[in-house]
Image (cartoon, rainbow, N blue to C red; front, side, top):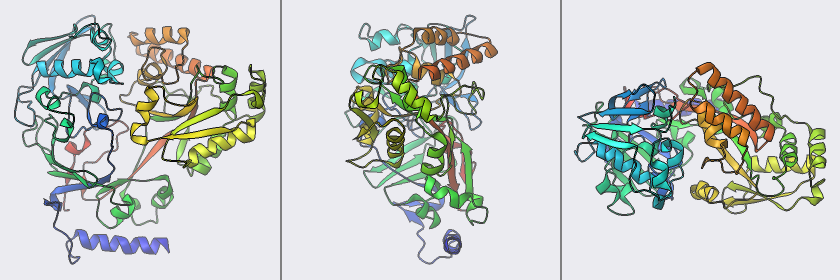
Length: 529
């Protein structure tokens, strides 16, 4: 019955797309649909999500850009900078900005704009959770962030189009860090115009913000003066909260959509008419539960190991995720340099879990303090994923936990502020394809992303040595050793590595799934819509 209904919908969509369906709209929101890529999405209520300096997401790469970027093959490519030089010891980078690079209002982008943007990101008043992670290698950024300086000593404008950047040590991954939104360029006059500057951004990217109706639609228009050439797709329409995106896709109202786990079985079936429009991929992501090691009972490594040993990972994937994920035994996802298939992870073992709890200073479940699990959600609703974890811990260890939900748009702000229970949901997707982006960024004791306050001096020393190791093979071995140390200390419970499923209309050309966010729309075009 489902297949018959699907085929019926495909016929309707085909008629609509060919212009044969009566009443098919030629435009929407005043935009000709044949020139528009139509998507469906949500809308954050947190202003910090729209500021490149404070966002914890991939940022808006349609509007904003930086010195470098990744192409669809994840090659590092020039962006605002047309080229760069690196000195012999690898600590001084000289960037040469494109002379045709302009903000959306036509003003040329200068080296002073880059310095302003990065110095602003480091301003302690902004409270950026990402500036030390992505720009902290630059000499003087940390001093500004700590309020000890007002300018970044490692940044120097040699002229309007030449920027010199000095970092604290030779680090092979430094350039890749500059693809993250924290390093994007913003216009001083624009961002200082008022608290809602981001609703009328004067940015540098391939698209301009044409219209934003809160709760209804966001419309982007191609920037005809984009320094790398105007995008082929003239408009991008993102309708907000308009319904189930798969249903919208089936009826021709959106051109692309990601799939929830619930839908995956249907569209991976080769007999499904829309199966040929499915694009799949393996993400560079790892989901996990963080134990705050400074709060009882997770100050005891045996309690942490007990909770990890009590987790039936394969059952969790099969029942909760319908088999649509890969088991995570460590922090590095498959496909990332450094992934170690021989890693000795903590796997499901109920008897060992109970022994580990008995060996802890608490001895048994009855002696544990009340445990609060923090998750992103609304009200008293408990997600199936959290409920499954709670049930496993109850069945194997006899431990009962309390779940608290935090408003999703402010979830990470609250975590970084320390407003969470003893354990909480977390996850990480690669910002650049290097193991430093996982091991060092998430588990070094000095990292702002180390939300569970885990600290191991031996691990810190190893990670610091790996930062500057120039022998690629040795460097990878060091990160694999670091990952094993992390697993053995059990500061987190590793859950899964996610998979990606996307439906893409046949007339959408040039789309390539990338496990790292890139400005993909500027590489795409519409043909015969």
